[in-house]
Length: 106
Image (tube, rainbow, N blue to C red; front, side, top):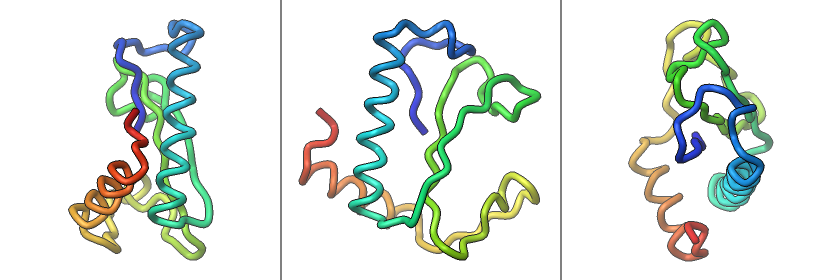
């Protein structure tokens, strides 16, 4: 998930500088995830407003979901079912190590 520093519920409330920074972080995140987890694709999206599924409606944020051929799509969203193929701590360590090795965190 990528979120701007400034709390706002609306994309149009972000300044051009904030939009540029937000997209730059998304691009860096995609590079990091591609290198580290090697997904076949991504879902990237914003849920704006409670009725659109925004769990934190008052703070705009962008979801980045790595995808693999044959994965189970949106199980948590549709059926409140969570499928774990790797422990979160393991994924965190992979990403943290890649960030440190490549200095993605500028």
